[in-house]
Length: 277
Image (cartoon, rainbow, N blue to C red; front, side, top):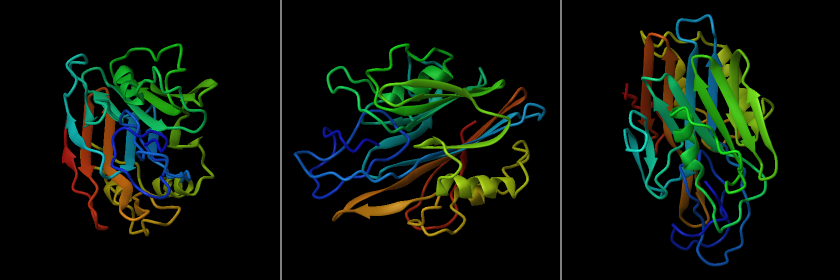
């Protein structure tokens, strides 16, 4: 979520947060409100074990201004037949896209750095659709605000980073990696806690179920304002609410694709996962 854009939300007073997994276009306050950027994280945890029957597992949480409208996963994009994901209704893109038949997926998080010029600016919500469809990221990224894009398939996962000036490309290693808005940053409190929690429980066998992962995805009972919290809820200023809006668990293997999704309830507690695929 972008704090510096002002087209789609009602006027608010005070400061605005910088949030999350980018569904597409920006949002912010109309007018010239003073802004203080709050570094709230979205999260994508990737487990890659090439020798496993299901090499790729993903736990993803989207953080967003809660007034921003969206719809749950479906085949929303005729130009990308077979690609599933939740749709951001402001800009028409997504934060997470999956092509089950091709065994491909893409996830985008907002990054940090220099914003793109307003004129000609492109939505980062297009990037997961390209990744899931097997299409390349544009060579020229100057029209995009900073991001981290994870493109994943049976061969592993690659992270493309863009800070408004420099593009990076990194293959994620075997084992667990947790990506937040500062990238692969295992010292960040949220990433550090989730890495430890994932390593402390058995890796799921998703054909049978998700094991301990739904409890991790529900936040483990950690206070939602704790820096370690995976699931967030905050009120900013008088009435602008932001936090975690949805959770995805994804498994990709040669003989199995499993995609489970849940909206995050206002009150702490379990998440009600629905199987998409």
